Image 1 (cartoon, rainbow, N blue to C red):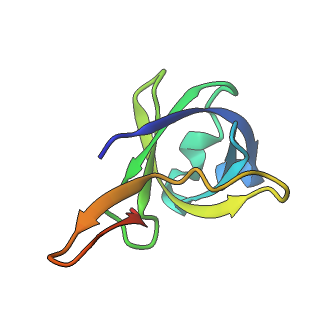
Image 2: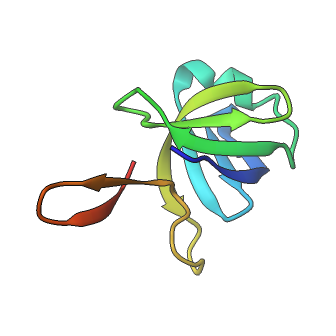
Image 3: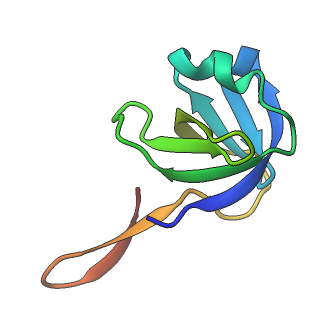
Length: 100
């Protein structure tokens, strides 16, 4: 899956919530909150699919190579369409794009 790359705009709640430049809001897995609270603002953040069903995305700090499990919570009101990554899945009758 191709990763979307954004930059870190805000870190809230002791690293439990981060907001990216596209105003997308991400809840960080509790075991990783200590990591994100030390990330520098404007760090490059790649968004890709993860393996944890509760936190199904991986956010990777491209500057230091550290990654965390996250859950997409939406975006701040008044913003454009969601920027969550999509993976294309096909079946025998049609092609559709679903969130990863």
